[in-house]
Image 1 (spheres, rainbow, N blue to C red):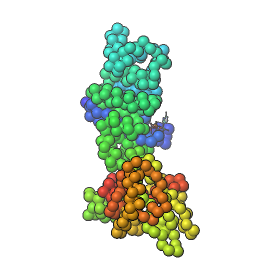
Image 2: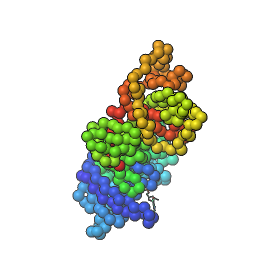
Image 3: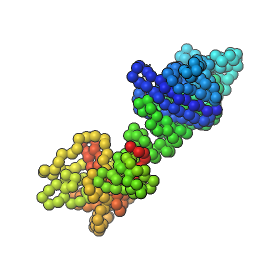
Image 4: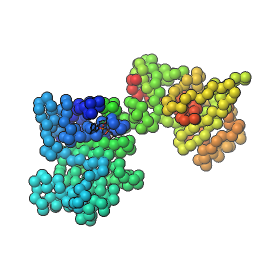
Length: 414
Ligand SMILES: Nc1ncnc2c1ncn2[C@@H]1O[C@H](COP(=O)(O)OP(=O)(O)OP(=O)(O)O)[C@@H](O)[C@H]1O
């Protein structure tokens, strides 16, 4: 049993979804993408609620939609179960009757439908609440009733439209784990729409990233997380993407520096840097009579959670910080590096203080004497040797961040 969908559909005249998705039985495919990317549109096409303009939807060898051949199976004749974002339970029916609705529509007797429904409610752990109406169920319970209702029809394709979106953080975590268990037992193809990368990583075997109606990346969650193919995915999984140029021979030129990255392709590439857990700002003394290399004479690194933020202390004549943006640039100052040049011996005072900070886990502002030194941060991070330094700009803060070169990897041809 497999799903093979080649979907081309235009909505409201100006949005076109053109995506090909295939999935084997027993797998969960997550559709991930920003608002308006076309995830729900794809789900509606698969459910038969929206006819194709071109393409084909085939499930288990049966063509469900093919405008060229004039085939369009109506939604009620498709073996498809849907869990909607807000569950859409029938408010006037009990949980049992909600779940029994599907089997009843498929021709089972009333008694048999209710028996099937009770079995499904037992499986999702809600057997005791069978007589409750939806308004007397919590969000998590309603979600499970909706899942039971979708599964009670024994669908071959299960569509889940942001099934955890309506839950609070704690419930979401618990229900996510339960959902994973139910999906493991499901033998058909499941397609899940989500905005949450964690849902995709935990629940899915395959992630399809949609942007502006196009598939920009498709692969296993791990692959998506380690080799993001777009800024959206990179932001989602928490890495920085830096444009560079593959020179051949595993060399990649970034702005102002070069990296050796095994397997780097030739041509325009983007290099992914995990966001550093720590960073150090002052790497060179300002030259006498002029601003420092970064346009400031002193930096004061500050540690915030796993993020490093630096604030430039402007000197007279220093250029103003770049306009706020979330763009990362890398190595725009020649010779950028971590502990560049001979390492300076650490004074006993600095070492003691650093050790104390490391022991206490404290992340504090370094004192005055730390400035202009290759200051070793109290947490894990780049320690010695060459490293790439990137500048980031967020709001009014801007500064330099370091990442280990070996952690960088080219991820796709730009
Ligand atoms: N009923 C509709 N009629 C016409 N156009 C629609 C309709 N619903 C959505 N669209 C358009 O289709 C495009 C894709 O919408 P869709 O709902 O598929 O995106 P999405 O990725 O599911 O977004 P979200 O994450 O916000 O739910 C959007 O440009 C939207 O304006």
